[in-house]
Length: 262
Image (cartoon, rainbow, N blue to C red; front, top):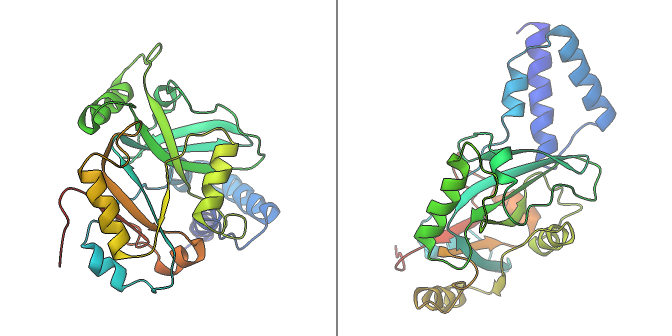
């Protein structure tokens, strides 16, 4: 590996650590590393990788019993609606929205800004990446997904109405600042985002009860069109311990349709 490739490798590694809230070097050191790479190779492919945005993972859907077996019994859990729309990530730089992209990595910034409730600016002076769901409120789940996807396909998305955004994750959140899901949601609300209703659960019986209510149309079926529920670990340090696979976080699970058993 030559010196330029080594610089690129280090830049990408530290950039990904920073976005995950796990920075190993200071902002000044990172900026110096970036400048050295720009001077050595201003068009290096690694810059396109960084600009494309982080990959948006799906949710696993294994049986709940199997998933719970891997989690310490004392770990706090929460349930949110699995909103049926289109997964979107937003990047704000120094408080100003800079980019919005889909699960496929497609830049849809212009289209997404037509949603009713995406703040164009945040009261913060750093880079923050927020994940959520673009959806159409107060209609059935299948139609919500089609309407949201339709907005993203429009070449001229101006004057579109009836599309909302629900934010539920800060992708580069530092656990020291955001130690649990409540802190994440509190900050998102403070910044002006809509967030999903969240209910604490203590184990399998609680999860089954909420899932049955969802099946009967008595849970998360008003403003938020949903195709299931999401169960997640509340503590973000425990989330880090659980980690992620190449396709899904190990600390969250989708429960859809009929109850899946081992």
